[in-house]
Length: 141
Image (tube, rainbow, N blue to C red; front, side):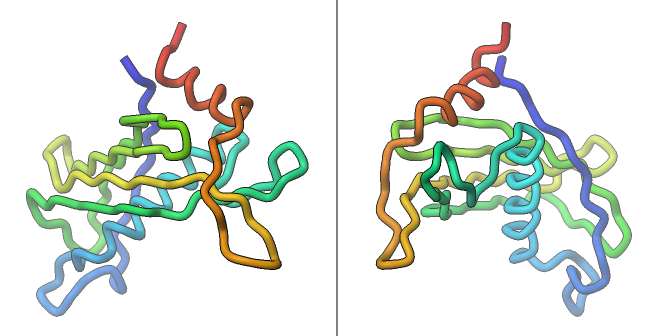
């Protein structure tokens, strides 16, 4: 079973809409924050110089399905796991719960890209040593 990274998010007032519930768009920010925390816990990042080369992992897809509402000052548990580790991309899965009850489920796909000041980012294979840190989470010993 894949390793799951767990964190929490407290709903701030600016996260809410006029109805007092979290605006749907905030979940995309919560997913990005949780992804970055997850990678940071492994000594990785979405923007890093790896083996002397600057790489980044921009999102190429994002989706979120909503089950129930959360409001100002609610605390959500957020679980991050890797759904798929491809040649050039990583698919993350996110589960949001409050008091053990589902709130939302999301998925993002990030593509490994070479960063260069001279031009646009270009998709490249995820470096083997970077991938090894993630693969260890998919196949725990």
